[in-house]
Each structure stands twice: as C-alpha cells, then as structure tokens.
Image (spheres, rainbow, N blue to C red):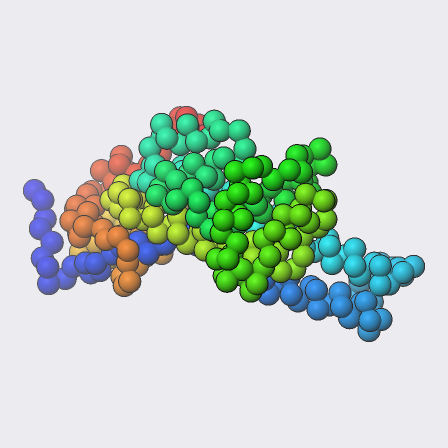
Length: 313
C-alpha cells in the first residue's frame, strides 16, 4: 500500500537547477585566476626592482645572475602557465558537459569526441547547445587554445587559420570594447611571430572563457531533462556512499515517507539543486515518488553495480 504524502508537510517543493556541477567546479578552479596572475606579477615587479628577498621558509638558494632578466622570463612563465591552465579547465568543463546524458545524448557525445582537436570539440559542443559559431567569447577561447598549443607543442602550427583570423578581425571592435582596448590584430601578429601573450591578452582570454562557460551552461540547463539529471546525481551519490556505508539506503528510506522526502530534498540541494533563482525546475512529483520507495527498492534503483561502472568507464 502506497503512503500518500500530504502537501502540509512536503518540504522543498520547488527545487531546480541554476548551474551545472561542471560549472561549479570550473568557477572553483578558475574563479580568481586574474587575481592570482596579478598577485604573481606584482611580486615579480618587486623582484625586478630589487625589492624582493628570499624568505626564511624557502629551503633553497635563489641568486639570479640578472635579476631583471629573471623577472622578465618568470613573468612570461606565469602568463603562459595561466593561459594553459584556463584552456585546460575549459576542456575539462566541455568533457563533463557532453557526458551529461540529461543534456547531450550518448550518440552526440561520441560524435563530438571523435573530432580531432580541442578547438573542434569545443566548437561543436557549443554549437550543439545553441552557441553561435562566431560568438565573440568562443572565438577568444579558440584563439587562446591555439596560443596554448603553440607554447606546449613546439611543432604546432603557428598560423592562426584563415577562418578564425577573419572572424576575430570582424569582431575586433567588439573585442576591444569588451577587453579594455585589446587590439586583436596586434595579438594575432604576436602569436604568429612566436611571442608569449601579454598580461592584457591572458586576462582577456580568462574573461572570455568565463563568459563562454556561463553561456554554454545556461544553454545546457535550458535543454536539460531535470528529472534525469536528479536521477543521475542520486545514482552516483548512493553508489559511492554504499561502498563505504551498507546502511545508507536504510538511513534515507527508514519507512517514513515524510523523513525520506526531507532527506532526499536536502541531499539534492547539497548536490547542486537550489530552492531559489532556478533556471530549470524539478517536478515536485519526482521527490515525492522517490520518497515513497522502500529501502530495497531505492537500492535497486540507485545502486550502480560494478559491472555497470566498468561499462560506463
């Protein structure tokens, strides 16, 4: 016999998604990149001026022959490392988004992953979700990826490519407006001549990456099957927890639908759902139906067996 959950004690009736877990992690890892870059460059400027001393906590020697030249080269290192870091984080985000079956089908995910380069995969992922191929932010990130590849891979092609060059030049006024006067023609020339990116260029790439990820995430949520997303999050959570706690299902489903409803609602909030300012809402019936399960039914529904995990990997 099913126990009906009375509306009088239904907790968290309005749950929804405001941002994906992929973007939460992206912001956690990249949220203060500009600040960190500036802090490092301020410190290197002190080195250049001869105002920096080796602290007692450093168990090493530091005696550059040419302090100014060392600071210049270290500045370049900070900038190219920051460029590589932000483009790598964009790629990590893209991989996670296209593996979300609530957003992109397995067939489309496989098709995208078969493309040759990071730039192609990012472009196809973004366009699949509704971002225009000539989006200013997408173009800036594609430029950043090209620059990153040229630095990391010494034999990488230094020519930007006619299509990307034309699109960037076409957007040069908007790019300058968005990125404090950045001269995209000068940046292209610097890239093709083998120079490292400047602080303004790296800061612009970081800003463009944040803006692009925000746009992609918004599109992903618009198209998301929110119930499938909730199901996937619960399955992943309980499968991991069950490995360490054999009582996890009994704790969440103690035989009282009211308690189960409250605990599932709380857990979904912890897993990224929100009660306010949601872009996409989860039907209240979903949590209600999950709360009505018995512990054994919940385990059958949410536990991923080892064979399934191996197949998924």
